[in-house]
Length: 422
Image (cartoon, rainbow, N blue to C red; front, side, top):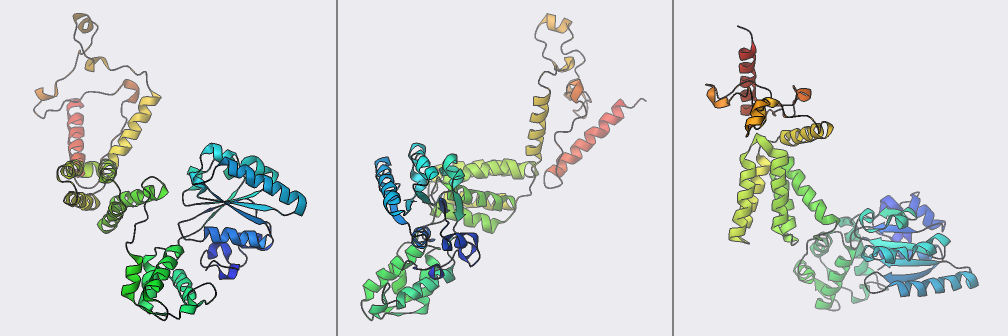
């Protein structure tokens, strides 16, 4: 069911609609080396084949998983002969190009630069992380999107009726709910939808009836798209963290469940949540950090699946807690000040004075012990002279920080009162 024309290509209209840059380049035969980045089943290989067809170039597939540099040299020799004898170019299509190491990717460079081959790389991983800079700078990157349900639906219906390339000769009866199920649970992967349709057809046989139940059986287990190390891993963690920060317990629970369902180590989720408790809830609710750490410890004690309950409880608590990043801002401001003034001396009155000589030099002289005052507070300076008056921490307006703000205001009043001449 691979498309034979650009008009048959399902989805990716942002790249292939009439007038778009990539479509125009394909139609005029002027496509250079490119990287196609997109999820599984979005049409990367089909698009590469169409480019080869439209530009009248030989198509040489190369697997980054099973083939190595010797095969590249063989392809290059053939490409040089083809160019010299026939004047015909060659497309080297590298599937899963992100699996090649830097040295293997370097092997393509001179041949791409000389125009011996046109490189088309296909990857499900972010090229900026996985492709060497020299190769990226010589290629254009096109991003393919996950196919929409309506795209998968049209492809499945075409496969049911196409007698030449599809299943039309079987004259199947396929219920609408079966088509809808295949389109929905393929998760944007055309290959998965067509594979399940073919399995359903084999199950019911010629002139058979594919119901929703048959389609579900053909789909079997629906795996979550989660790579545990690549970009999708960090995208899901980012979605989880930002849902917590945005006070959306529904979103946070969903992304938590997606991570678990994809096989993520719960400790990774706990680490992100504990960091979030300090960064985004902070002193608006100091119990949040305690609860996050306690939930992690409870998971260690219980294990799955019971341990998922404290994980869920923590997620809900953090999402619904008042938010403040004042501690993060205070840390940043204090670090900036420390870097800008690394040599400022500690004021004499708060220096340590363990020896007689130090006491003679004035170390600790004039220090006022806070607990000697009825309010357990005495106004004295703790910052170096150059930094006095600096405000690294300013409490936020929510939760526990309202109490902190009142306490700081009270101490400020006491300081003014005690320092004011009588």
